[in-house]
Image (cartoon, rainbow, N blue to C red; front, top):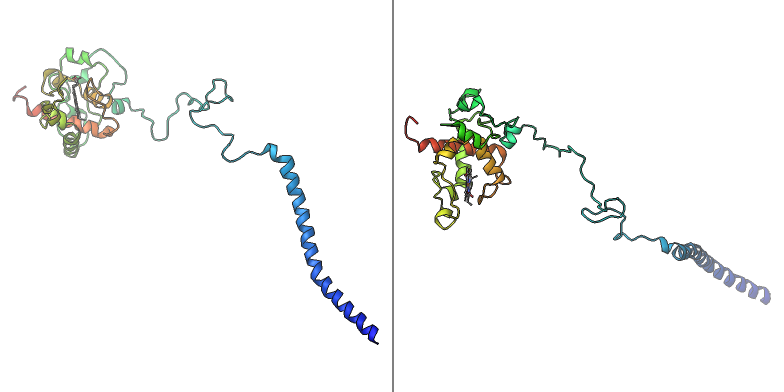
Length: 246
Ligand code: HEC
C-alpha cells in the first residue's frame, strides 16, 4: 500500500519533469539545426561577400577597366538631343542664317513689319544697312524671328533695364553705373554708333548669347525669346537717338 503510493508520487514527479523538459529540448534542437547552416555559410561563403559600399557599378567620370578607352562614361551617340532641346530653328535659337553666306541678302532692306502677320510695331531691323556692315556679320540674321508687339517691346524694356542698363546705361549710350564706377577698359559699347546702328539683329543676339570681348554671355540668364525682345528695345533706343529723316 505504502509502496504503491510512493510509486505513484514518483511517477507524478517524473511526468511533471517530462512535460517541462520536452519543449526545452525541442527549442534546443531547432536552434542547433539553424545554427549549423549559418555557421557553415559564414565559414564557406564569406570569401564571396560583397558589401553595399562596394557595388560593381560605373561611377560617372571615374576610370574603368571594363571599356577599352578606360572611361566608365560612354560618349553620347552622335546626334543625340536631350528631350526638349531640339533646337532645329537656327534663326530663332542662334540668330544665324540658314545658309551662311557672305552675300548681303535682299531681305536686308525690308523693315521688320514686312514679314509680320500679327499687328506689330514697325521696327526697322537694319535702319541704314550698308553692304559693308552686312559683310561684317554675314551669318547673322537681319530680321526678327517673330513679330514684335507692344507687349514684346515692354518686356524687352524691362529685361534690358534689369540686365543691360547697369553697363550700357538706360539710353544705351554706354554710361551705366558700372561704366561710371570704373568698368571702362574697354567701356560698354554705345548702341548709337553707326556700326551698331547698322548691325543686323542677329549680331546683338550673338553678343548676348556668346559674350563679346569684355562682356560676358547672358545665355544662362536670359531665355531666347527675351533676348529677341531686348534687341527690339535696343532698336527702339537707337531710333530714339536718331535725327528725324535718317
Ligand atoms: C557687366 C557690364 C555689361 C553688361 C551688364 C552688358 N554689357 Fe554689353 N558690353 C559690355 C562691354 C564692356 C562691351 C564692350 C566689349 C568689348 O569691346 O570688348 C559690351 C558690348 C556690347 C555690344 C557691342 C558689341 C560690338 O559689336 O561691339 C552689344 C551689342 C552689347 N554689349 C549688348 C548688351 C546687351 C543686350 C546686354 C544685356 C543683355 C549687355 N550688353 C549687358 C559690358 C556689359
